[in-house]
Amino acid sequence: MILFENVTKKYRGTAKPALDGIDLRVDRGEFVFIVGASGSGKSSCLRLILREDQPSAGKIHVLGQDLSKISSRKVPYFRRNLGTVFQDFRLLTNKTVYDNVAFSLQVIGKSRGFIQEAVPDTLEMVGLANKAKRFPHELSGGEQQRVAIARAIVNKPSILLADEPTGNLDPATSLGIMQLLRAINASGTTVVMATHEATFVDIMQQRVVELSQGVVVRDEVGGGYGETASIPVADLSEEGVQVLRTTEAVVRAALAPEEGGDPAAPAQAAPDVSAGDLPGSSPVAPAARASSAAPQAPAAPAQAPAAPAQAPQPPAQAPTGDAPQPIPPRQVTPPAPQPQREASVFEEPRPFGDSDSDIDDDTVRAGGPQARRIPSFLDPGRPMDPVQMSETGSLAEHLGLSRKDDDETDVGPVR
Ligand SMILES: Nc1ncnc2c1ncn2[C@@H]1O[C@H](COP(=O)(O)OP(=O)(O)OP(=O)(O)O)[C@@H](O)[C@H]1O
Image (cartoon, rainbow, N blue to C red):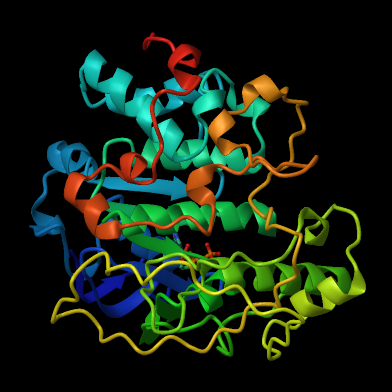
């Protein structure tokens, strides 16, 4: 699907190449993190895949095409197969959410009927069906990134390239974005993501390609960001470390594959971390914080831990002989479950005082005065059937998202 053969990229006026003899193969359906210190060549790599730039030496094939043979005139057609997401969202500020997503289809000449069907479906998929009429400045950062992701996937690209997609987001919001990228990958889209986010890379146990000064120094499946010399350790405050650890506990429980289960299937037992564990929220009980802050410690729950409710899901793809051989997932010990509290890590700040009518009923969880509004497709307990999804190509449908929601009245025709 993506093949780099001895690729070197040297920018004009620079002494050292940004990429130096890279060999890389990414197969269909993979989720690959590209990590490395600032300046190690991650973005250069993505730009070459996108054919925004050409290598100084070596060959690049993407989707079976030799990129050196694609004429400039045909590059836009080639790019229709690739979705891109960036750290800074890059939304059109004078267009609504709906029109931002629709625009990417209009420019490639999709019919009005196609657009009117595809855009609401995709907005549902990213949990923004009820915000179609908003403008970017009326959205939170996480919501803006979800618009950018909707725009990137609305034309069902084979490959999604993400350059630091969570770089401008807080940890809890980033988690929602990672869940979304993972769901998109589970539906069959190959995802290549450049990132500095050690937490997600460590926990998601996907393939990790590490660059150092333009050279691949590590390429492993199920690897972590962890103890790599080329990654700068962030200068975090005590509070920052605490937030990161708390997030790590949440992410581990929500995203890590179950032991012996399918890496593409979401963990069935939601972690017991409430909004109180998240930055900017009220303090939590010491016991809860302690369990979150020490995710590796053996769980010693007072009550029997929640057993996985589902049998392991089938893999999204049959492994190919060319793909790197998976290594067994690392032992992951989620924080000890605590009854009476549900995960609410997907809840984002609601700075604009949304009324309840703004919320899709399907996303409101029953149970208690503080029923949380979690887009159902982001619910870590929600089973996915990637095989079924890939058969129809409709992620929204197989995530159980009905189109009979309030977005039908919310979105208007393309202007
Ligand atoms: N257009 C350019 N002209 C000259 N040098 C460039 C250009 N783009 C990137 N470089 C250099 O190439 C090297 C790799 O840059 P690149 O942006 O690919 O790294 P990166 O790993 O994505 O960094 P970061 O994590 O900071 O985004 C750096 O030394 C950078 O200064």
